[in-house]
Length: 351
Ligand code: MG
Image (cartoon, rainbow, N blue to C red):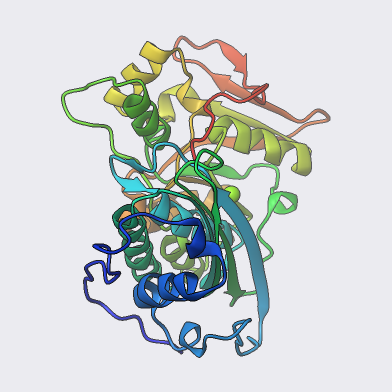
């Protein structure tokens, strides 16, 4: 097993010579070699990466593995509570966690725009390094390309991840059952509104911070407590509403949620109102929904609440059988409203 190193680094690149990314930094020659050695290898240092091989060579786990990939194109690159770098680590870690896997290894592909400040790149690398430490994962392989000025938007990142499934549960939409409790791990909408507040220059008493966080540790806690987790989904693009709709379509069930039970912070709710957005559809980067048997719901909430990422955990509804896949919400005034899949893109470049 590789050991994480805990120390803080300052930018090691001779940025006085090359303060910005040049096309040559993606050209395969001396400049690219320097960028890889001084920035990526220095930032992500671990024994697998230091083999400097075309492919990472990993030991084969004895159990099932989970494998996922995601691309990050968020704008702006830096926002209250995070940046594209920790998002690119946490997002992929969370997709592995939603399969009940322990995340182990990530790849990281960078598409850099010519002219990007080397210091900006370093800040992103440094926060990826810290996010990896926090989540207990290692970047073991990667790639860098540089595109011409105006052909990118600073930095795009793709991360793929491998995790190992160390239990016998098969967690996924097909395992959702009649009567399952629907649980979220905290308040919704903060990530999306942190980005939108910055883009629209909305100001509040204190800035809304993104909820970006790794969820694997909390999920593994649930499994360690023998909770029969049926399904998990992180509430990223499209928010809670889209996640529930995706799952009812696969599980052929009906979901009933209660508006009063769904936690939304007051500042997030008023930002949503100002911009005409519904917090149920707004992206989160550290929030998930869990489906568990009703008689394990209270214990699930207890276990989540003992974890830093689950302090706002609560039950928001339940699953019932239905001929027609449907998500229905009992509103604050007691009316029933159908929660549909969103049509089109509500918030572009949110992750
Ligand atoms: Mg996901």
